[in-house]
Image (tube, rainbow, N blue to C red; front, side, top):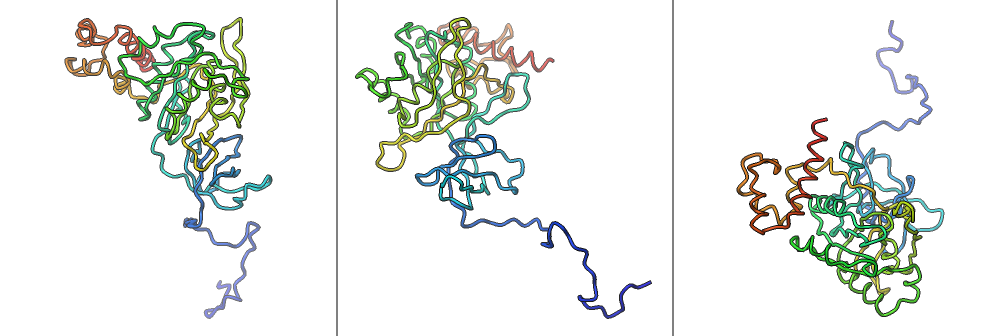
Length: 347
């Protein structure tokens, strides 16, 4: 039975009210041509702080971004209240394409990769020469992550007043990595630095000028103290090394990007401090690309048989090292990394 006549009018049709409103659903999204560009400087429990011009703006992700993650270093488009006032809240409506992404997994058995920072140019691997003792295997893993992400590595050796830097520098000399050696910097050095401290800070700053540099390293090696010397107006908390375990205490709990500025205008560069790491998982890295992190060994693979795993009796790298082209310890590091990956693949 027809409820309405043949010639119905819109007024004759009953419309069921919708509690959620009557706006029609659509897949079309606003273009946000008026959105303002900003850079993500830190992420904390859903609140994302961005630098817009010279002011910090707190924002949240817009619903249309869905599950797309936002990390420190991302270039984003923002709308809403961009005043930077205490109670102001903007929305991130777009994440621009990343030119680089430093990734890591919790360990080699973890299939979920995490983007540490985006759009960095340089990875500064900070390691103490003592207290806590250096961990060359962690340095090697960070190098793999850097080369995989397309970042230029920088090695910063701290606490040279406690142990000589020569053995570590000799170990990585074949890689041609830029490096800086510093003595132990203490919390008060940024307030009243002596001539030696000023020289250390200046040398590090010179290598970071014009770049976005992310600092990675074990807890207690002096990353945050170094950042406090580079950007003294943005002091971060520092901690001590545990005398029993020899490990540092986590004082940095989230990544933070800080501008290297002389106070006269645009930043001369950016430094990103990150929480201390106990491991640097490489599950996301294709094992065949691990060799790229060892440029002193890579030419020696030309004589390897097809699909060589670089740990077979006929691997050409043994002869390459035996003839003095590379340090045997570098081949040992490579094979340890590959063996770790092979054990995971066999599980």
